Amino acid sequence: MLPVAEHLERSGVDSVDIMSHACFDAAVRFVGDNPLERMRVLRRIMPTPALATSHSGSDFWGFKSVAPDVARLDLDLAIDTGVDRLRFINGLLDFDPIVDSARHAKSRGVATIGALVFSESPVHTDELYERKAREIVERADVDWIMIKDSGGLLTSERAGSLIDAVRRGAGTKKVTLHGHSMTGLAHRVYMIGVEHGVDEVQCAIWPLALGTSQPSTQRIVRNLREEGYQVDVDDAEIDAASVYLTRLARAKGLPLGEAPEYDHFHYRHQVPGGMMSNLRAQLADAGLLDRLDSLLEETARVREELGWPTMVTPYSQFVGSQALLNVVHGERYSVVPDQIKKYAMGHYGKLLAPVDPNVLDRIMNNGSPGIDEKAEAPAPVLDEMRRRLPRASDEELLLRALCPEDAVERVIAGGGIADAGIGPLTGSDVAGIGKLVGHLAGRAKPGGEVVFEQGDLRVRVRG
Figure 1 (cartoon, rainbow, N blue to C red):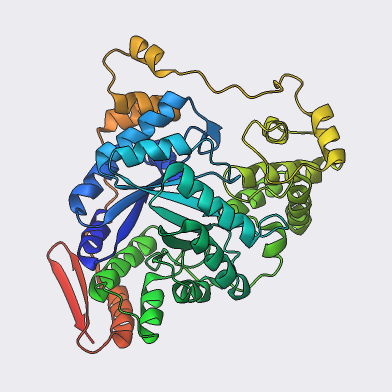
Figure 2: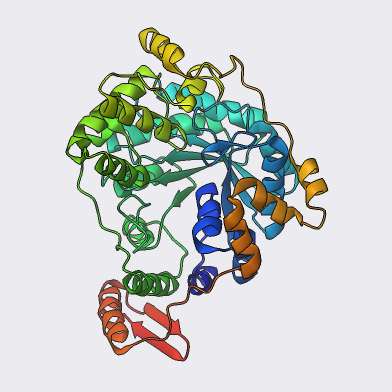
């Protein structure tokens, strides 16, 4: 990340997303990094662009509910590291859990974003999104509204009317568009978004773009300039970051972003890209991989029966888990996870549409009898943790409250950030980079340049 951050600092981009709950957990669990130290270091390297992250208020942290004092500490420590743009999101479009947190962040001088997760269903209408944009502006006075198309579902036909509706609800607030490339339509949707007045589009630098990720920064910049828009980013710095990321991916055997084929079936099941591999693995373990299409059909059916929840974390996982259990066990809703019963009972917030009555009966009868009718907020835990661990810093307490104990111990022993460097360039690296730089230079404007720096090596190719 650090070499890329240097290029982003010089690139002229407005903001950089640096953390999410999933990234926080992965940094601790799988890398042994202190994610808060990551954020501090990135702020030191990138003092110019806004640094952004996500928050769920007093609701979920990833897949689990958290105590309200832990959620507030998470928010405050993120701001302390230098984050100055916070995105608040609730997959049910129920803003009760996030209003107080958004107002608190704004009181600390942070720009706040109210995220509206897009979904396709009979209840996710333009009118709903206009109303929800107006509601979050009125209740939390957010600075931005985000149209968050996590599933890559927006089409050219829907994008214009949706964006117009959200802009009406947002009033004078800015609107940003965040899409994914799963259906191959996101690049066109972004152009329509700009035509309809969005203030910002969120992209990823190839090879981290495309596939289940965001549209390519390089392609979006080029498309906008073709249409006569002024885009004040430094192509050479973006391309240099791309060269580094490409080399890193090849060194670690990771895939490069590819444009997906259009899959109309995606609009039925709406399973996010990051969840598909997990479904495949679970079916393979059960010897049912040949039934993937049946699982996706069942996912679409379960989603409808549950009142059209938005397919975003954690609700996409809830729906997918119930669908998998239905396929594996044969009898539908004979096994009901606790999360499904809690969802149906309203523990996670107000539903946009009611659960199918017949399905609700099966959920209530077959789900755990130990679930209380009304949800109780988790009790505060930090005071007790401070008594038990009097020498622990707030950062250590946060890590221990959110992550597995053994993983936290590795982070503490490691002292901060693991070295994930990829070593000096080899001859084959140089040959590969030369091919990529040649491709980039071939599409650069006259007078533009591509620069790559690694140690004592500096490669510059001018268009």
